[in-house]
Image (cartoon, rainbow, N blue to C red; front, side, top):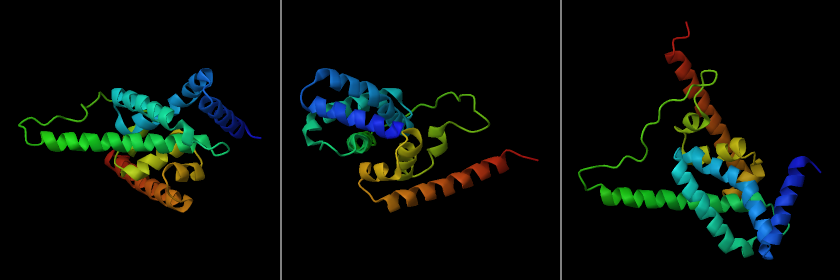
Length: 190
């Protein structure tokens, strides 16, 4: 058994104990998975406070839906499917708010510009790098590269097929290569 399989098995055992009412298993599960979930939310938003809010919301939903987890199934795709729904719901709420406020004289900016951080090796931060990509491509890249999911796990979490995930990843890489090539060309590498 590989270390990843062992860690996944440990998480699944914690979830089963959590389903049976073990509070310490619930706390341990929250400790082990929250970092990945927070990275998933903040890579799409850039706002720490919104990521914190969504992290809290996802754990509330997991608590309410914990009885639906089936022992023997991979836990992380189940959790990230819930996290994805939380993110979509947040996006929809934000869109409704924007439509309501569109008639007012002042338009609320979604995110204030942040001071630029020093770039590592001339590359922007991951969240900035993937920002121009469509939402579905940002989502699969984040799950694969930030959260370390396999193609099959991403497919389960996004309710799609492994082939669809591979296609999104391929298109995202192709677009990123183009963006980086244009950036280098504009930088004056002469």
